[in-house]
Amino acid sequence: LPGLRYRLVGVRAQEVSSRPPASSDSPSDDLFFIHIPKNGGTSIEQIGQNYNISWGSYAEEISFAQLMPDGNTCTRFHVPPRELSSPNPYIGKRSFCVTRNPFDRMVSEYKFLIAMPGDYSRSLGFEYYTRYRNGLLTYPPCSVEGLSHFVVTSTTAFQQGRRYIDNCHNLPQSEYIYDESGNQICDDILRLEDLPEAFDKLMEEHGNAARMGATQALDTSGVCPGLGVGDLSVEAKQLMREVYGDDFKRLNYSST
Image (tube, rainbow, N blue to C red):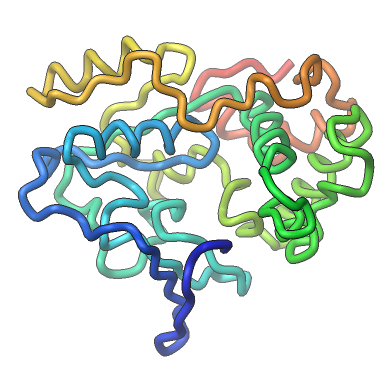
């Protein structure tokens, strides 16, 4: 990934960032954040840093990359706890996570990659397009055709076995919340639409000083104005219902 150094150790690709290591006296030792991609995780990580808490990409044990079963690599803070190799910092910790409607999440992913700043040929969006063949730039950015093509291409790749493309951004949310036996492993599930109040309440209950307020680290609301869930094609929505069926059902989101 851009801005990060890679080294290979055995069969595992490791990614070493320039971020400082996690503090050993972090006040969050009993509460750990499970970062489900495109659900406000970067904002929560940055809030933690403001209060000397090392969550997600700032937690040393999960700040590098892991080789995934399909041959792709994902940064470990994006890997579901049930698939994380040792060291696994989630073990023995109370955890919390954030969910959102799968349709909104996929539109957010498209806008996130389209919005990457700088020379587009050197951007993360272009890198993902060429590396993962995810269809992001097949059509003009911010076009109705482009959004649906990206969704169809990404979900089809998932069904064909390329589950871990785009740095694990396309994995079902339920895989972060439940283990292989169906047991819930994310103790406190917050819904994105209930933030910041739900986050602040949870922190208060645990005696944690962190507060969210109006923080939004990666706000894509101004990207591709007017483009949204209503622009997804019938095919795109049907593929999403197939891939994210558990998310719609178990997390109680509308699939219509």
